[in-house]
Length: 68
Image 1 (cartoon, rainbow, N blue to C red):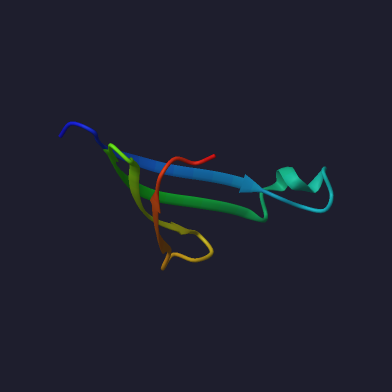
Image 2: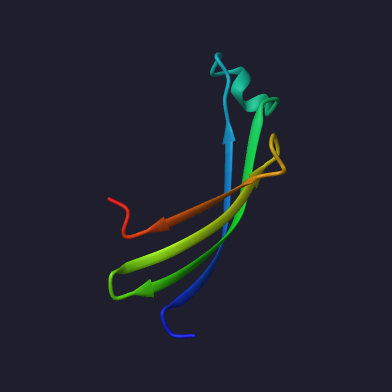
């Protein structure tokens, strides 16, 4: 299991055109995901499965190399 990582990912956001109404939490966005990373000599390979409360079907993301 060396160089392998599993992560739970979660995000929360609120938005509104009026700052005072923003804290009524009427338009919230929740995100969730599960990420697997394997570090290779050429850089990490990452697989991410994720979804939101607006799109529970979610999506899948594959990346190779470091983010910059």
